[in-house]
Each structure stands twice: as structure tokens, then as C-alpha cells.
Image 1 (cartoon, rainbow, N blue to C red):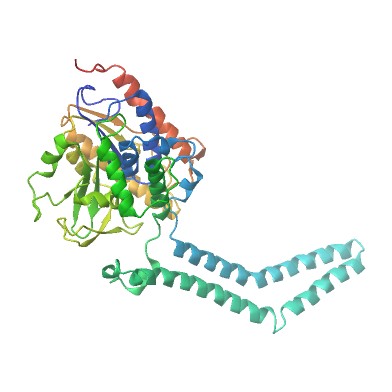
Image 2: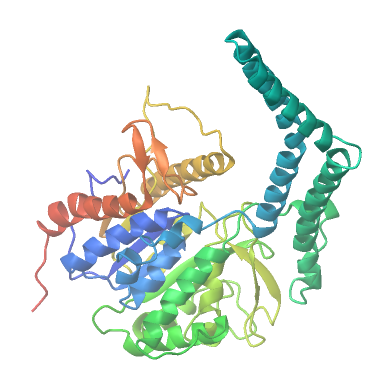
Length: 473
């Protein structure tokens, strides 16, 4: 099996090198640290591939924009990162409404509990000889309570306020259920029951998608004060920037995988150099009417407007978030159909297969999941919903990483792994998490730094520093 301490063969700058970023959620912060180290060390990368949140690192790295990931105001160090994969807006509104109803309902109980405290204070004042003060205090509070609990006061107002708060919560859930029905693009996807539509998925990708696309547009537009365009136009401009600069320093070929829930297959989106494009997209498979491989979409062709769609789909975590609905181009293999796309945590092996088909001869594989645990390394399970979901994601990715290590050992001339020995930050812990081993809070910014340090310690210093760094004459 491939491990950081036992790399597969030797590193050489003469070989076509692919950087493969895999993981979900907060793994993007670890990727950013690794990308910074590789950038500083001047490591040659010909192709960058991503799965899950690795697609974000791949998108920026492909156009020499990695600094927008690790900079002090970048994607993963910005305070905005704490809002990534936040609870869905309708659920937040419903939760606040329910909390407000609980607080309002507790007001009469709190007043009665305070009456007991006032009575005890009055008793203590009487015992020390302050009967007049005690009588004034308890009598005044009793009259105030009698006024508040009069039939026309709290007994009438409290139930109405509680009912209003509950109705606001139900209205928020109903709005979230009705909106997809009113959307023309999603009309085919509203066959779920009313209960399922009211509950919906718990998390939203809106914040990370908005922040990622904004930073991409800032990178593309430069100093020009131009508003961010729609997704299709932004995708076309991104593809144009990358396509025109392939081969220039800092620009790399791009490849990523997502999963099509409707077709029940993985889809590949890629923008490759002409020397590799024809062979990659002309492989044997199920051909479309246009004669192209139906699972692979050439971002330099009719799929050029789908680049941002592919990014949004890669960020959609199964079950936890809604899949991204994409309407394929009428000229493409799916003939204008609308499909639901999302990430597949077990697709790292498929990603490596596509990287090999794209001509990669050696691979730098980056994963934020810690290695499998040994005996006596168990820890207490997370009690919060986000933590429990994150534990499962991290566990699945660790097991899948072991499988691809065994399957692809020897497949490339060199395979080099960068991963943390211990990573307490779960895939959904964007606000940080308490780590039992170090007895402190581990933040997202620290995860960026850990990726940076691991890249130097596991790859740059021992492998690049001792490998073949001379270009052929």
C-alpha cells in the first residue's frame, strides 16, 4: 500500500505529473496549504484533478490562482469560511422561531420562579428585623404578578405569541418546500411527499459556491470593476482564460469527476492540452450521437459553459445537501436533459483512472483524511449532527483511500501521498473543533498550515529534494 513514508518509486521532473486533490468540506483548507508549499517549491505540475472540495483547489490552481486559497483574506482563511455548508436558511428560520416560542412560553414560568426567590429574600429580611422592607418587596412583587396574570394580560398574550412564532417557523419550512415547485428548472424534481419537501436537506452549499465563484471572477477580471456574470458566462470566460494560457507557467490542465444521480454513473469534466485531448475523449465506451465518450465532457467544446456547473456539483455532499441540477447543452450527448449531479466520496479511484487516461505518469495525491486507526486509538463519538455526519464522511474516505492505494500501487511511474497523521477537524467543522489529543480548539487556519507543513515534510524535502530535479537536455 502507498504511504507517505513509503512512496511508490522515484520522482522525476521529466515525467508528466498530475496533482490529485480529494476530500470533502474542510479538506479544501488542507489542500490550500499543500498547494502553497508546492507553489513555493516550484514543483512542476502538468495536470490538476479534483474530487469533492478538491475541485475548488483544482479550479484555482489550474489558472495560477492558488494564492486566493491560502492568502490572509483568501477562501480558507477568511471569516466567511465559517459559514460554508451552513444550515439551510429555512431550517435556520424555523429553528429560531421554535426557540422564540420556547422562550415566550417560559416567561410565565420564569416569573413564578422569581416569585419564590423574592419570597425567600423577604423571609431573610424579616429575620434580620427589616419587616417593613420585606413587606414592601413581597407585596409589590405580588401586585405586579397579579397585574401580569390578569385574564387580559399574559394568559391571553403568551399563547398568541407562541402560536405566532410556531406559524412563522412553519411558514419558513413551507416556503422552502414551495420554492422548488415554482422553479421551472426543478419542476421535474418535485415528486417528493410534502413531509420530505418540508424537511428537505439540512445543509446548503450556497455560501461556499458564492465565495468560490466570486474569487474566481476576481481572478479573471483583474482590476476591471465588472460585476460577476451569470454562471454560464463565468464558465466560458474561465475556460477561455485557461485554454488560451495552457503551457504557460502556472497554468495546468484541469480534470474533475462528479456523480450523475439520474444516469447512475460518474461524469468527467476536463480541459486538456491538444496533445492529450483527442486520445482522452476518443476512448472506447458508450458513444453519443456526436461520437464522443458519453461520460467525459470536453470543457473546450460544447461543455464550455458547464465548468461552474461541474464545480457546484462537486461541492454537493450526498444526502446532506441538494444535488446540483444541470441542463446539458442540446448539442451534447444528453440532448438538453436536466440531470442531478453531486459528489461521490468513493470516486477517488475513478479520478485516478481518468488521470491515467489523461497521460499522467506520476501522481501527487493529497488527502486530508487521517490514516486508519490502530488498536487502542478509539475516541468518543461526536454527539452533534454535523460532527456525526463528518465522522462518517472521513471514515469512508479513509477506507476508500486504502483501497486505491492497493489498486494503483505500481500503476504510475511514481505515486506520492501527502496526508495528515492526525486531523481532528471533520469535513463539516468549518468553525473549528475541540481536539481531545491536544486539549484545545483546532481551527480551519491551522489546517491550512498543517497542509503546508506536511507537503514539505512528506514530499518536498525528502522526495523532491533528493529526486531527479534536472530537466532533460
